[in-house]
Amino acid sequence: MTTYLPTLKQLQYLAALHDTAHFGRAAETCHVTQSTLSAGIRELETLIGVTLVERTRRVVRFTPLGERFVEKARRVLREADELGDIARSAGRPLSGDMRMSVIPTIAPFMLPRILPQLRRDYPELKLFLREEPSASACESLHHGRTDCVLLALPYGCGDVEVETLFDDRLFVAVPQGDDAAESGPIVADDIDETRLLLLEDGHCLKDHALAACSHPEWRGQASMLGTSLHTIVQMVENGLGVTMLPEMAIGAGILDNTHIVARAIDSDRASRRIALVWRKASPRERDFRLLADVLRSHAQRQPATALVPSAKPNPGHKRNCP
Image (cartoon, rainbow, N blue to C red):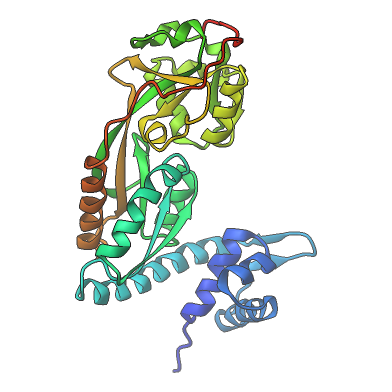
């Protein structure tokens, strides 16, 4: 008896449709026309004799069997990717395609310094970067959309291998002229939670900042939430409050040409741990550990951060407690 098996292309179409819940966006993800993707999924349903997707004019809904099927499809696609990884791992180190997700509180501050050297040292490596929050990055990793993730710990990313790179200290950023801008570390309990500006939910830096203050209950008390560190810095610059910034952002110049001072926090929890993670049992483990070594050694060569950046004089700035 002839056995008909789904093709990898059909499984890719199905997984993309599940990710986007939209035929047009799924087709763009797979770099095909919408009619090609729709035909491929219908052919798959005809092949196995069941309906996987309920189609209406406005909604794409997977049937219960479709949900189970797409879960298995992702596993097959990951295994297929790893077949290529096995071949690549037998060749030159750090060569070929590699997809890496990076969280937004790391990407703009660390990557511009590291990527030029990485390209010079490993010209055969084609690194495809994907910037996304921690939860989305870990989901992409386990669904096979990305090969490794550069993120900040502690964060629950599931069953992964972890290579720690370095610790990234956190600092309180306050407007120059504020009482809190005086020299010396600031005690976490002295921070006024009603003036604390944090990133919106989905960014692990928010949890790290609250942990540094030893006040996780402040999660719902932050006066304003920002979508990026650059946005929050502008809020602080305009006297709307204070925030917490990682050392790598300060070292990359996020406070240059502002009236903001960065102060250390008197807390043994005022840091986050930068790490590279990947799926367990990945055949490219050797590449990931080598990449972690490259990232770690580059970070160790960076000069120490100037904790109080040279700010423009601003005598008219109001003095407020943090």
